[in-house]
Length: 137
Image 1: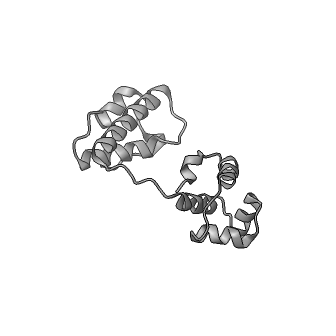
Image 2: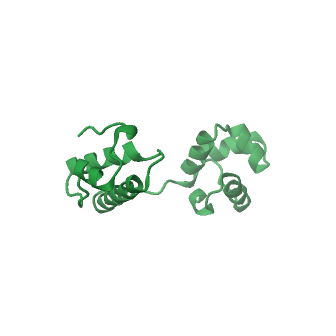
Image 3: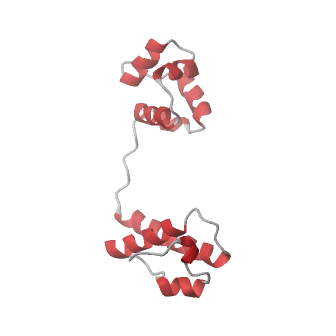
């Protein structure tokens, strides 16, 4: 099913339901259709009916994913750190500055040759506003 551009989507809840009736999702086709609607509506200024419909469709998608998709394995602390650095366009040199260590130590941490200390984890947790648990190995 191909959905319309957000500006061309129905404005009333009844008209949105006519586009796709919100029902529990039981198969991949229904899931794909619901995801397409969620992606079409998400991120745009919506009226109350459109927002209510989006919330319901997103909940149906979330329920289906929770029931059918395996839980992702937690990332190792070093992988989380690499991800945070990449997302913030930071290098190993920047990591050294954040941790207050020389760059060779930062490089060894990223290669797994040296572990993060409790002080490092505290600094990284504060810098990236994430739980310290994400940085534990």
